[in-house]
Image (cartoon, rainbow over all chains, first blue to last red; front, side):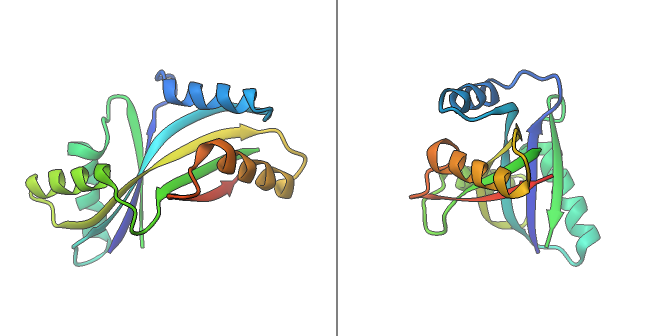
Length: 78
Length: 78
C-alpha cells in the first residue's frame, strides 16, 4: 500500500525555511504570506489492510518521520 | 487563498534523503520500500480567483519553489 506523510512545523514553532521562502517570493514580486515549509515522505508499506497500514505509518511518524514535539503529521493511504 | 505545493524528486532522480529514511525505517523493523522525500510548502496567495491563484503559484514553482529539471510539483488550492 502506498502512503504519503506530510510533516509540518506546528503553529507557533519557528520556521526559518518558511521565512526564507516567503521573503524570496516577495523579492521576486509575489504577493504571499504565511509561508511554511515541511516535508513530504512517500513510501510503500507492507500491511494487510488500511487500518493496519495506518497504524504502522503512525508508529513510523512517532519514531522517525516527525518530531511530535514541534511537528504535526498527516497520513494519506492509497 | 491558501495554497499547498508538494515538491518531489522526479522518478529516477537520486534521493539520498529518501534512501536514508528507508534504511533507518528498516533498521527499526518496519517493512517499507520506495521511500522518497520531498517538500511541502503552505502559503497564502493574494489572487482574485482560483485560476489566477493557480497561475501565480505555478510561476512561483518555476522560479523558486521547485527545480523543474529534477523535481515535479503538485498544487492544491483551498
